[in-house]
Length: 310
Image (tube, rainbow, N blue to C red; front, side, top):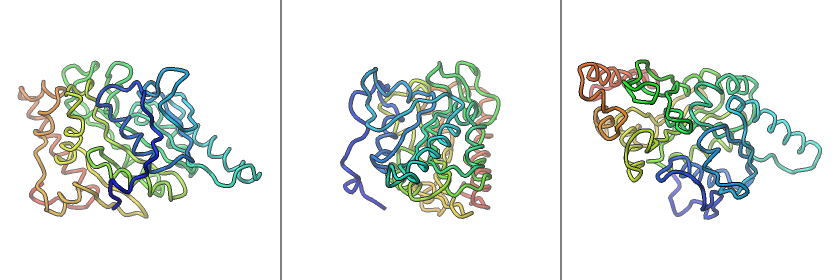
């Protein structure tokens, strides 16, 4: 495992972004760029990242960048990937740059799933990162397919009544070479997964939990704390799937091995305001129990068994 001192010193995500305080996307971009390096083409699907780049004509992102439409992440990556391969074939460039798609959960789980699925089926050579803030944060915090059961959004004011999708598992079903999840509470784990994705040919999918302070209703200074509790409670599992095998990583691995006891889901729900309405009602207790069962079922699906302490 690489140490913080060994990370590249070059900064490709610069000062001057228009991100909110405590924005997870800005920190995630900084880490991802350190892993991928300057020889990267960035495609930003309509999302908060479309806005946080900065005010025209300036940009906080020091890489070739294209802002693309909500539904076109996979299609746009397919075009760029084919283009750079043609440039290499004609001798106009020596090596293919990394093609990176950066999208939110709205542009991945809902509006962009068809485009992403098509690109994966065609075995397009690119990295797709979904920074999942579990709602449409940039357009008014509406619910998305990633919003968990019981969570408040402006379109689910009493709490969402449907469970969230599991897009990472859907991408595994596409039989692509690499799928992984990440958390900003474990930045070196995320860095290593981005580095590995860069070294693999074909479609790579990485999903990063991105707690949004205004949307999730917690102080911006607690973004890392909320990220960490999501993992410790099992509400966000850290793993990678490669060559048909799933391996848990970082804190999730320690929980599965029994080295650290899993925290109750309630501990995660209590440190953010979007679940406040379900913590004070009978129906809320039922939702809490359903979320605990969802955690156990997710571990069982990935690992094949659930220890008693979970």
